[in-house]
Length: 115
Length: 116
Image (tube, rainbow over all chains, first blue to last red; front, side, top):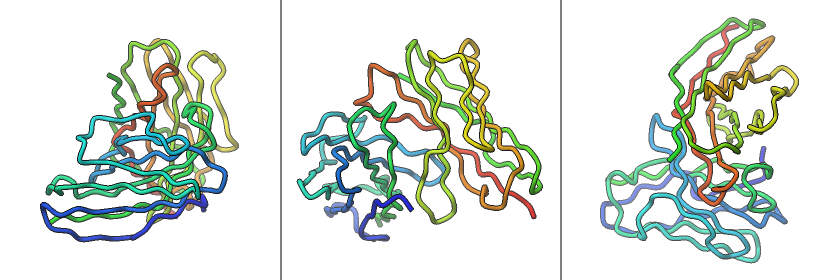
């Protein structure tokens, strides 16, 4: 396994609600990235945090926000949930922010269903 | 914007045979990196192999090798002596050297099944 964990494994929410997903990176990894993987699709980049600061963002609205903590844990928060937010959410940690050379270690994902 | 295309949604091959997964990409960048990731059923995605665009030599990792054709913007993965544990979704991914803060761009994946 990769040493990256995520909780919860599965989650069911109602449209309009808010959700918090959690990720625990490998110890010493300064970067965490979050991806959304819709059914039958490849992962899409949401954002990246390096040493507790957001330093990269994909094409996702501001209702997707995150936090990274000094203890190598992080959160993805989604407000005003929409049906299209139903997906597998993956976090990935790496030592530094250079995505090209730093191997990203993915967690198992959180399956979010919005009804 | 970059796009990655995997035109084979599903493939299957007999154990011990060789299989090649296709990937094409579109970019105006000259310096970039390409990756193949493996996502086994109900398990975590792991990096299989990485290729630097400015290197002519194709990357290899044990039974896994790539055929990188920069001019054709093609990046295929060859799995030799396939094993049952190779059964997984395989994703091709891309990142430009100058846009690493935009994360990896993934294709839609190829579901590979190794038949005993």
